[in-house]
Figure 1 (tube, helix red, strand yellow):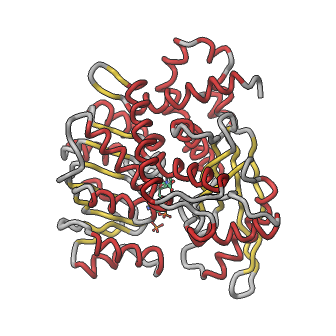
Figure 2 (cartoon, helix red, strand yellow):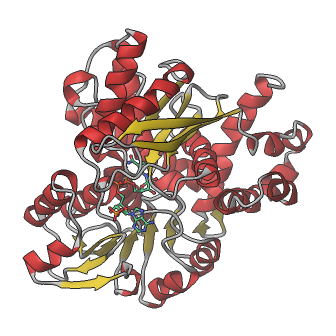
Length: 437
Ligand code: NDP
């Protein structure tokens, strides 16, 4: 860890992600000296390649704007680099390295042949016109295209990158390469996308929570659930919770949160989807429409619940928030967002022995269906909704089984350890097989 901090100064999120993995892997690596001898831990914290580039574009007023673009190609031992693009003003090297590092483990857990990567830009799509977003995406891809490809690196969406952005990025890639290939996932259904991909992260996260609850003979049915965020992951989490008989009572955005004790049903969710995906409005408008409470600048964690689904961003659950959740009787936390819980909060959940599903296991459904989109593109066919959903459920079950196999600790499953060790073993063995690369 000292070496990681020295070599990557100021990259706090990256240090945090590595620390969590190292804490749970150390005893395992010490028991298996072949990994120590091959210096696998030292190798996996060093990205295979980092690309940083200038993204100049013209706004609607004709003024030149300049953003910074990134792609972290973290590890290709298990397949082409795979992981999303994030467009958000907070994006920097440390945040993308933490996301890429997590992605490598997550992709390993999915059982599909995918390496790990992540990228993005400090561009803020909020309050930009469609034309400006298109100009930016075209400029971004005008550099990125030379580094990616269906057998090399396959980006997808993340915060600020949804169907609209993937469309503009794909169009520009196709134009520059003169090739129609599965170089991005999360594509539109008419042009190579997979059914269930938009839903996959949220659905997968709720399926994972259901698997965890099943180990206690319990289920989502009848549970009061807190969901944060109101984007892609949050929306489909709410949808699946309600399909499985649970009740989601909160949503949020970076301005505040709404609390609707009567539950966010399908009709209200359709309103949220229109508000967020089409009108690009604020969650406060939900409270005005459905006459429920809106809390400016607040997050949902002080509300009493059975299950929590953090689905907005990193470090959105502090140690105090974690304590509030536990004190209020939470039985299960399944992370839709990446690293939403601070390290002290993670330790608190583990000490309380609640069912705690860390992001790299709980939200792997998204990238798993991206992997299925790549398979369908290679086969040049598309599977039905039921086929993809069945495969998603079976992958989530298998991730859960791996976590239980490696995370059992006298009568309790430590899913953090389980996910880290299971992800690591496959990756480390493959790296050793492939020699010193
Ligand atoms: P979206 O851009 O669709 O939605 C993000 C949501 O989180 C918005 O409601 C946004 O509010 C809120 N948010 C973003 N940043 C902050 C912040 N700093 N503070 C408070 N709220 C914030 O993104 P996704 O739903 O795709 O992603 C959400 C999380 O899930 C991320 O952590 C992402 O890495 C993770 N994830 C996503 C996957 C996917 O398939 N999309 C796959 C696996 C993980 P506002 O509109 O105000 O910014």
